[in-house]
Length: 260
Image: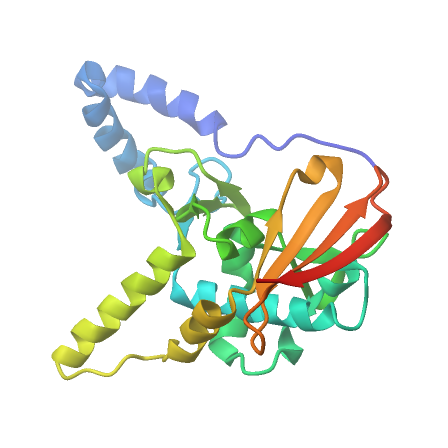
């Protein structure tokens, strides 16, 4: 294998600058005028969606933590909670095959890319770093969102990389899952008042979240302590399932407690 450097379209810039300086010296009076003159000779400069040098995409996408994402997150947490009835391994339980999820619509299952950009979920990888087909895990940020903590409301994705820094003021905004639900209910109510129907009904998901409080608290993960807490739907007791992990992240102790 050998490497080589491609120059792209930059070499033509120098020829163009010389040509403009010779034929249209007034073009250099200000940046806007120079851009206008240069665009007349280099039409690629007019296409803002592509880099004029290498033609790579210049499109950036803004993803919002909205109700469909919140609904998907809650239902994934339900699967993890169910998995914990079959295994003591939190790592094993926190593996969700999205396409096999009950009650999740196709639109919700199509949200994995957005949710991963928002940092709420991540791919489950093999030892060879390959994605286990259709399988995702809820991240610490995802569990924090479920626990009601503030998380980023928006994230920018540019060339497959997520970014929380930039000029867009939305990147500084945070929100909670409760605020997301309240916003959806208000929007839905406003639509009904105008005689319109909401495209999707998330009432059941909101009720499930409000009634059962299915979330996970990560407490000092660096020290290996993870606490899973929920409200038992039959007794209404607060239950916790705690794990202590050694530095190499093998579970060494587990305990379940319930009480009023």
